[in-house]
Amino acid sequence: MATTAEKPKAKRPAKKVETPSVEHKLRIRVRAYEHKILDLSVKQIMDTAARFDAKVVGPVPLPTEIKRWTVNRSTFVHKDAREQFEMRIHKRLIDIMNPTPKVIEALTNLSLPSGVTIDVKMV
Image (cartoon, rainbow, N blue to C red):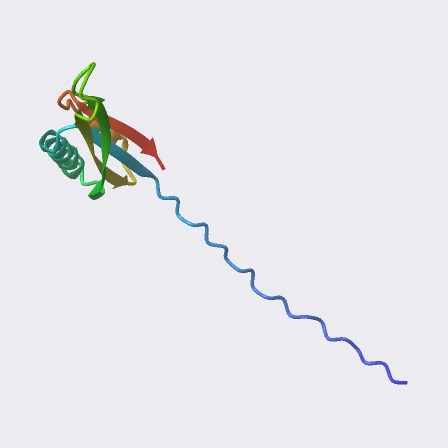
């Protein structure tokens, strides 16, 4: 039997592993009972972000949350007579891509009208 000499394996160039660029996102949820005040607040946030050249996605209108209550009109008789009350909560979503510290500082110093609730998350 003849033995065959093994050829040395050629080294392959090392693959470059690309690390995905981490994109931070500032997610702002704005809520209010009145849609006009909500839209003015969202416009104020968008203008502040645009002043610092931040990439903004939104505002995305989220479904309006409706809370309803049914109560009796009368306390003693006429139990079939009822009134319904409802409260509507309007919501908007704004994403700011890769916010700089200047943008975050400007948004924290922003004064918005009462009745507007803001939730800010870093995603």
